[in-house]
Amino acid sequence: MKKVFKTTNICRNLTNLIRTLLVICVAIVIVATARIYYINNQEATNPQFTDGNLEIVMIDVGNADCFLLLQKDKAMLVDTGYFTTYFDVKKVLEEKNVQKIDYAIITHSHRDHAGGIFGLLLDYQVSKLYLTEKMEDLDMSFTERLFYIPEISMIKYTNLFAENVVDVRLTEDNYDFQFSDSQIQFLGPISSNYCRLNNYSLVFKMIYKEKSILFTGDMEIPNEEELLNANVDLSADILKIAHHGSKTSTSEAFLEAVNPRYAILSSHNGKHNEYGHPVKRIVESLEKRGIILYRTDELGTVELELDGNSVNFVQNPGDYKSGTQFLKEERGVNRM
Image (cartoon, rainbow, N blue to C red; front, side, top):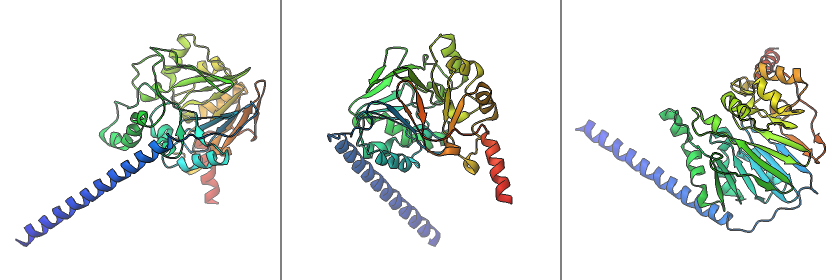
């Protein structure tokens, strides 16, 4: 009898705990929803960031992506980093006195690109949000699905909060738009039957007068080949290295087609770089071609400005070491 009584008590306590947690979760969702609704119904106004030049900030969010673009009084975010690095993003937004996000582009729904969307919507009015066609990876395991649910759900339901959510399907329409004095041209994906979510990454070129930058998300080599075979104009002055410098991206043929003067890369540094990004093949290719590399794992947040005729970086260029080499050197220093 005692055992039965004890088991019953445990079940009752567990049930009460689950109910309490559910109530707390529902309360958080209601409060968050109300705040996002309130934020997006306010008339926020940005200051004049630049006189006309295009300012780009590659925010240091570890092995993730987040770019802030400013021109005149307009602000745009490309990806939002992890949920856990959103405060690093918010710090930069506050330093730049950003009051609203005119455009946000989420290249794809992996948490290192979309994890900060919830925090962003809680804190800022987002006037227009561009999403890729496919927002969930069908090849995910059950555990991975549970892990991704918060970000995926938040993105799927952002149409309740953003003024205008655009589901980019390049197989059906043209989604190019004007960002202040710059032009955004979506180039990929140009198909709808990829095996991996990375290849659904939104690929687009940003052009300001005579200068351009190519954003690639986590696009992998099969998608690169598809764009090359379709004779898409990939040429750009600056290339955002795809997938943090992973071996799955940035083929020689793709580099040749883009033919950039500069490359920018966002990755973790030292002991936190479990993937070894960027891989040796890619940094060696960049060095061989004389492409000047700027990277967050070595430099932290990177800032640059385009005046339409030239590209000017605030920081000095980074090194051509692989992520694995940086890690080995750090371990060697720590042993001394």
